[in-house]
Image 1 (cartoon, helix red, strand yellow):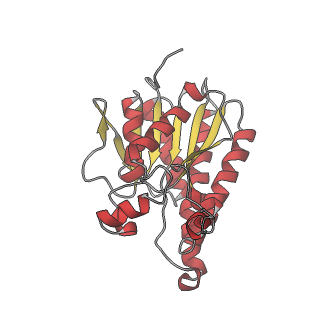
Image 2 (cartoon, one colour; image 1 turned 90 degrees about the horizontal axis):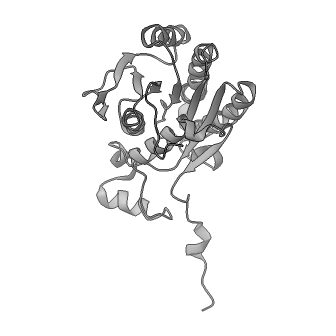
Length: 258
């Protein structure tokens, strides 16, 4: 058995794979030998490269179901197969529930839950017809399992995404494996918008047991593992990539007796 992750000859799609966590995932898959197609509404400023290869970009609005179906048919037609789908695209602005209105919150759910469902269904139509099936990886969040003030719709969508992946894993076994990476805080180019300057980022990192935010490359390594044959008996699983989670507040609030 190989001692490294090997994805040579595989074709992977990473939604939102042009920056941040998505770019980290794309680089990891490229380094493992995969041919990677990334999609987003706008092209990246610079192509995503790693391992001597460059990811191919195709424009796509994941909220357009017909466009999603056509996208995966094109990937299959031009690349010959589809082995991996990483449902990474998503996100939310900070907005308290009473400030948004139902329609704004519904758009967050649409992007973070319905769009991955649409993409997975289109990918499954390709994967189920080829020997070896395929692997789908959902990019979840710790916001799906804890209160998320300011991002309630996002947290609700991520909770639903985890449940969706577990059910897909049962319905689509044994041909297609479906797993979720449950992410904590990741240091991307947008980290300062959420946490402030370097001092703020460091302060937030100290709340994590491992003492820092994750790097996109670390998320990419975990994703490449789940996509590979090294994880051939893993499906319906949720892999926590959160540095140990959050230190319980009571530990800092309590007064020790000694």
